Image 1 (cartoon, rainbow, N blue to C red):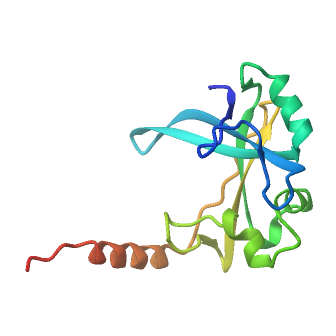
Image 2 (image 1 turned 180 degrees about the horizontal axis):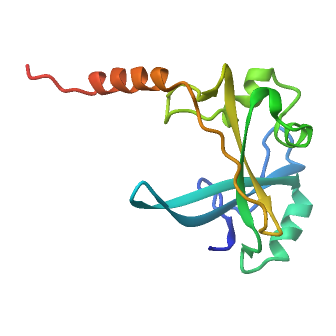
Length: 165
C-alpha cells in the first residue's frame, strides 16, 4: 500500500490552506492511492482526507515531513445519521451551520447529483480519517434504496439520449 501523501491545493499549490473566514486556522490535504479488485476489475482507489488545525501547527507539521509522505493509511468510516460517533461529529461538523449544511459534504450519494444512499430510512454519512498506526480498516455500509437509485439512473440515461432531428 502506498504511503499517505501531503498533497498541494489544486487551486493555489499551497500545502497549507487557511480558511478565508478565519485565516488563523486551515487544513492540509492528505491523499492515498491504492488498488482494489472488485467484481473482476482492478480499480485504482484514491482516498482523500483533510487534517485541520492552527495554520502555524500545520506549517510545522509539513516542515517536519519534508518528503510529504506519512506513515499509516486513510480509512473510510460510514455511519447512518443517528450513529455518527460524538468524536467524529465534533471533528467534522461545524455547529455554526444548520444541520443539513453540516452534513452535506459527508452524505454518501449515487454519483454526482444522485440521491443519498440510505440504510433503512437513514442517509449514510461517509468520513475519511488518517490512521497513523495503519492498523484500522474501512467500515462501510451497504445501501438499501436500490429502486430509487435504479429510477435515478434510468431518468439520467433517458435525458442523456441524443434523438435525431
